[in-house]
Length: 217
Image 1 (cartoon, rainbow, N blue to C red):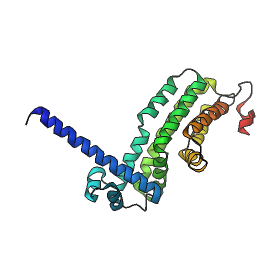
Image 2: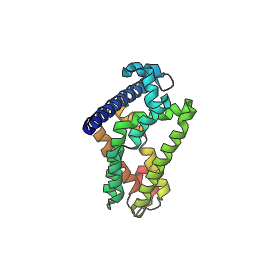
Image 3: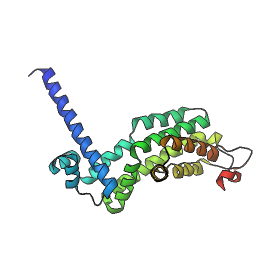
């Protein structure tokens, strides 16, 4: 067999493996969201994906392994990561927050339900808890790096630690889900709202202290 033919066979094998991985992941995400992580056995995921249970074990090793694979999609979303990098390098504070809001919008469009599933799973599966803590630490570190960069433009009386807490609270995936799934907002509406609210909360009129601004009362 020629080298080209060997490479072609390898490429096809890798492509089929990726398709199988995606089918299992998508099936698991839908079932976790509908029935709950704890109530979804691997055999049900396999049936939904149209593969053998042994295939699920071979690809992911365990149910928590599937969840870790889903989480990686959210944590390493390339477009959201690029927008956050752009936000960090943007010199204008309002535009920096607008880029950050867009990055959050993209991340939650692709994965808000996965983050919520992951947190719920940690309540019943000790093996998942360490992963939750790693994700939360990564998120908090990113928010703190943003507010550290914003420090010269923060409202008087607002320090980066408190600013990071505000960012954390206003960008929770549960809030995204509440606004879009329950109240019918669009992703565009969420992004505009978040950008405007963060601007008001963090970059208030510097002639006033942060806790004097009407939006914080």
